[in-house]
Image (cartoon, rainbow, N blue to C red; front, side, top):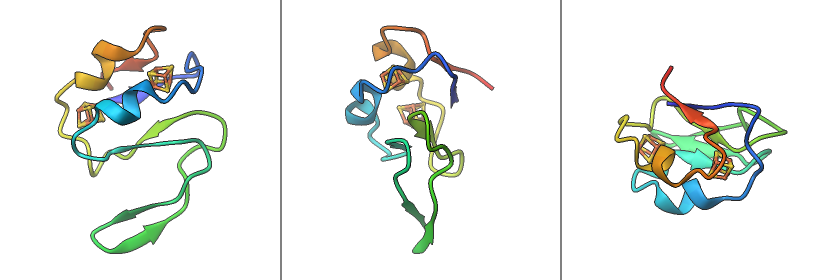
Length: 69
Ligand code: SF4
Ligand code: SF4
């Protein structure tokens, strides 16, 4: 899953993701104990390695900004 430029950074999807795969713009994250920099400084983003494609996030996005890759 990925987040497009339609995102209005409402954070609703972040709360929905049980895998902690979604982060705020500019926010760093950790994969397997390795610290990484934000994948986007402008929009909420999904970390591919952490996402299991459950699609829960897409269901709560009011602007349809979360799509299948
Ligand atoms: S598809 Fe599921 S695991 Fe992936 S980011 Fe969305 S809620 Fe999280
Ligand atoms: S729910 Fe949609 S608009 Fe809100 S932060 Fe997530 S992708 Fe962006």
